[in-house]
Length: 433
Ligand SMILES: Nc1nc2c(ncn2[C@@H]2O[C@H](COP(=O)(O)OP(=O)(O)OP(=O)(O)O)[C@@H](O)[C@H]2O)c(=O)[nH]1
Ligand SMILES: [Mg+2]
Image (cartoon, rainbow, N blue to C red; front, side, top):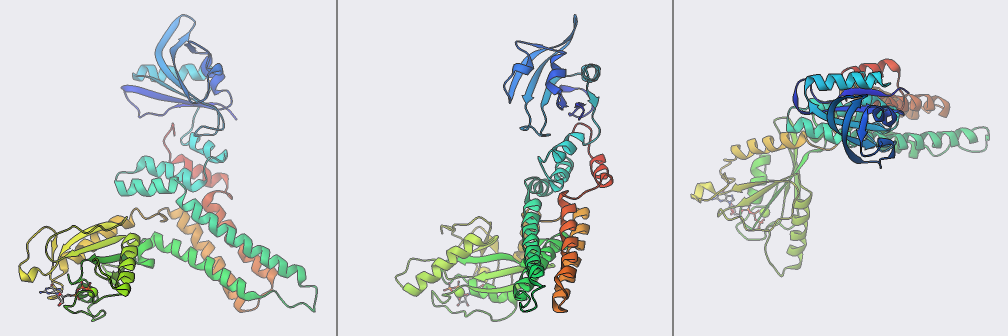
């Protein structure tokens, strides 16, 4: 493959500009115009070298060359990144010198395309590179970064393994089909497997439409000292007397869960036992569960009725400090509500706000229409498999649909692809990436 070069920094004058060279001959070509303390061919990988860009007597600039050797570079090829002074003239002249020395000008996205072709990343990750560059907000950036780091790929990898396992079970069945005396392999395992694959695909599809959370519910733990009104709040949010409420401390012993939809988002509310020091064995078991709920929850409603926030709550989610019993005139920091009087509107709004924020950063979320389209086809194929199992179809027919499912997933990750699709994806990149 040819050695390519491009200016990777934005067009215009700047403090410095970076010109990237990648390919088998990258080091050799740059050496033709680079004069440093030593030849780049002798440089250790992942080192930076100061020197001049020089042809005969003409010195173009003083530069820094970063040397990366295959396969440990972005593209998987030998790569040199030349940081030169950011004059437009120098940038363009340097590019011309490189082309004169044997490079080809890179096409849009060609570096990333090579990274994909060299197995440095799959197609979803390559697409994430473009999304990352285009990201304009934190949420967008987080989503692209998680995709770049393999969130979608990993999920699809798991599905692929299950599908291959499925295929091997069917092949086993086919092998024994000649032996009339042998019954078909137990199909309950196949049913379970098909169901598993189908629901995973459905979940992915859902994540594209409405966010992962709509399907599973965002876990929200209501945590606080005894008697602050946690159960009263659960009941108020649900609009029913779900949990027992009393003025006795330690009323709630076990965690109580129920779901609630606010603004199209499904929440899984978890009322918990009040946190305190106690010698009651059962209550302590409940308190342990409270702590576990807090740790797992994506959102924690930390409820207080006196404006003090001194409890040590282990958590990784977002905490909302809520001051209950506002009707009693308590003062202090926190979102003021009265669970007893059903005066909880500000809390509902805050839950929706925090949820929308966290949905945008949840790990596996489809954000790409191409992925959605292919995964829809995979989903249809696995539904045909399920129907086929119900109808008692032969293994041969089932395996056709399984193949359809596998190849649709392969299109997402790029294991199966065609030049047209690739060209379309990489043409949207900027030159130099
Ligand atoms: N005035 C007033 N009282 C409230 C409010 N919310 C709850 N209470 C009262 O506070 C007491 C405790 O309420 P619970 O909901 O059982 O409190 P809890 O936090 O669940 O208590 P534990 O289950 O023991 O942890 C009850 O008598 C409620 O009626 C409120 O907004 N205003
Ligand atoms: Mg309670």
